[in-house]
Length: 270
Image 1: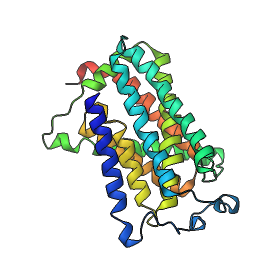
Image 2 (image 1 turned 60 degrees about the vertical axis):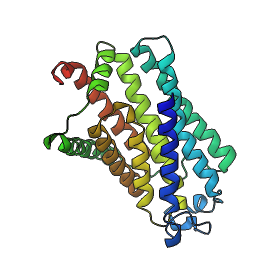
Image 3 (image 1 turned 30 degrees about the vertical axis):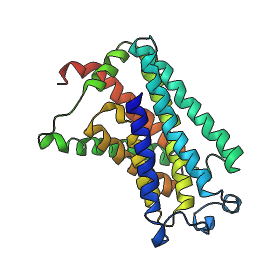
Image 4 (image 1 turned 90 degrees about the horizontal axis):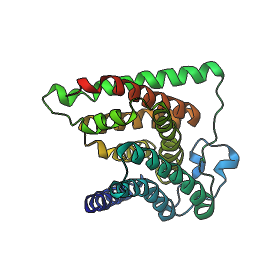
């Protein structure tokens, strides 16, 4: 509990520090920033922008709450597979909180960027390319190991053992990650940061850092690099193409295939 509190506290302090440093350069958190600079529809662009502190509060709670609540499950007398299953409901609850907070506190829709429709071919191509790029990210995440960094795979092994022979748990975890993480980190957090920032790459960078922080319990530098790079790729895609559904499907496939491979080859992981 103390470790979780310290991580959460340091994370929030770093987040506010990083964002505050850009104010003198008028790159971020400008109260006069015009939402029309974003490529929204006229209806979305005319929405009144909430105060930055309101959006920052929503972002902080959306990131910290599932981490802290998941940590509390460590003290519940259940086996790891049961804890893994019930912890997924925390992320669905987080997505519900984001939805309610957006409507009640911000007076905005959770997804303020209008969804761009893709034809079937373009949708499948998007998912395929995103998946291929994730493989590239996975290869690059192994660079520290090439230079002698010893990775910690204990969390991966524990996850694989819990999921072995449990297809329902595997699918449920992949579906949960695909929907809730994209909804929260790309749909909600990225779009809110974009409302506050003049430099439109900075929200992608910050949301990728937050996304990688979500996976800290792997205690793996490779996992941090992987999730950070996927966060960048997915953030750029959502910024340019505005299709959250393609990201959700790609995320589901990435996790499901990774889980499936892990359950078959975890014995060979050293």
